[in-house]
Amino acid sequence: MEKAVIALDLGTTGNKAIAFNEKGEIVCSSYKVFSQIYPKPAWVEQNPYDILNAAVKALKETIEKSGSRVITSIGITNQRETAILWNKKTGKPVYNAIVWQCRRTAKDCEDLSEYRKTVKEKTGLFLDPYFSATKIKWILDNVGGVKSIAEKGEIAFGTVDSWILWNLTDDRVHATDDSNASRTLLYNINTLKYDEELLKIFGVPECILPEVFDSNHIFGRTDKAVTSKPIPVVGILGDQQASLFAHGGFEKGIIKNTYGTGLFAMIETGHKIYNADKLVATVARKFDGLPYYALEGSIFTGGDIIRFIKENLNFINSAQESSDAAKKLNSNGGVYFVPALSGLGAPFWDPDARGLIIGLTGAATKGHIIRASLESLAYQTKDVIAEFENTLKGRLDLSEYRLRVDGKATENDFLMQFQSDILNMRVEKTVFTEMTALGIAGLSAVTTGFWTEESFRGIKKIEKIYNPEIDDDSRNALYAKWREAVLKSLKWA
Image (cartoon, rainbow, N blue to C red; front, side):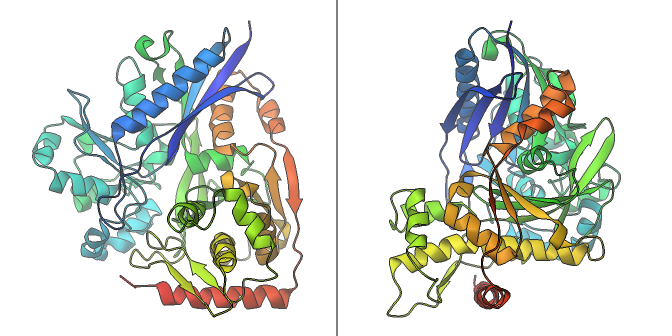
């Protein structure tokens, strides 16, 4: 009988389930979107039931489409940092999910600024609204009665993986893996445990936190009410760590960048932590008790800027139009778009930065703004990779590295060529764009023996290679003006 492994990819704007066969081919898939909620400027929420329903529908539909195939396991990968709190007795959320993009807790971070150094040393992260701890604190402090119930041990916190795992499993498993725990500001990546001092700083009771297991742990099995037959849930990874794994981040000379709602560039550093001033140090994964670390640059507004110029500005009707419009122009005409729609992440970490379009003249057109929006993704990526080089100086020679890319925006041919140009680096686009799903499917399948490590590595194939086509003077001049524009957007709020 034929078999399949399913990747349940829990994204920021929708959830997808993809079934892979023994050859690593996609058998079938299902994708369900859910709504974003914007209660105030720079606040972003989601209804936890919308997330759950989209996940369950996508999973059921994919299982149904897979026909008579035996599903050997389900692996979960997820949008990270998003915080959900629910009542353990009723299973009901006490508030909406506060999404990773939400900046409502910027003031809380300022009030705790004396702990910045402690937080960075212990977690590898910045004291920033992006991460989970201040989101948890906000719910405990602002939703009536939750704090007292939490102190009694009746509230559960989880990132999206934990929320879905709880609802999928027959015995309500409350757990996560190290890659997700390392994004909460509560988990010490040196000791690989929740940290008492950090819990005290943020006022979070340890009893609400999920148990942390290895990324390749067998977490439980699905409830028959969800999947008809129980299916093992094997493997959990944060979405960017899953993408890194799929791209072969463990190989020498690889930097990966995912062009999703945000941009997420990562480079693996093996078993060693490199704590950088402007980058996040994070757990890439933990297999069989052994941690692997990475440096990451998290950029808040990436591919979402394409949605913005389409839906908010009505400049394009489809993402493809943005590439076509940009290619019609010989240059950006001096126009720069800093997409700080939710502040700026790496390497600036400024929640008060705001979006800016600068360089407009009477000759500027809609096309120049479209092109500038696409170029901003490439410039932001260069900002982060420059920090990789600074942090790993003497250990990293960028001339020996290449950028492997995935995500919807990699289908934009103009963007990918410009990315190579501005980095002066080879860019490799894989045939399979759903690398996050492939990563967790691979982890799950290798753990169960459905795939061998060798067969998993062989699934990844390069579809197109982009090499630099502009000279150093042009590259340096373009990037220098970008940096000038960014400086003008900082501390605006």
